[in-house]
Length: 123
Image (cartoon, rainbow, N blue to C red; front, side, top):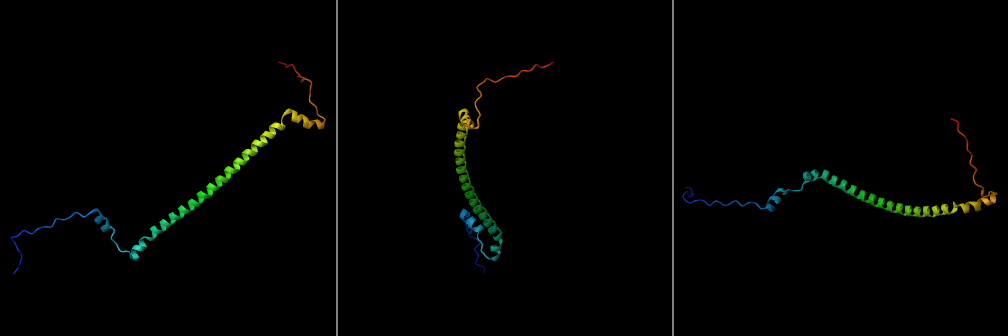
């Protein structure tokens, strides 16, 4: 005989909605074996490549910043040098200074007014 009760209603269990954590953990449930390790090798190389680019970019930026600092110091030094040479040139090129330097050569200042020559143009 079968002991199945046909008169009593069987209580059905309510299906619970899985929680968000349960959904996420169910999707990422895997074992790490040789096949999955081989699948991650290209991704690992890509991350290694990005890391190398990041490190080399940092070294390049530091080197460039040092070079810029050195150039700024050189520009400031040359600016000061330019200012002092410009002052020397202006002071040496004054009329009195030039007259003092050429006196030893026998040259003197022209005290007579300049003669102007005029020609008649023919039409």
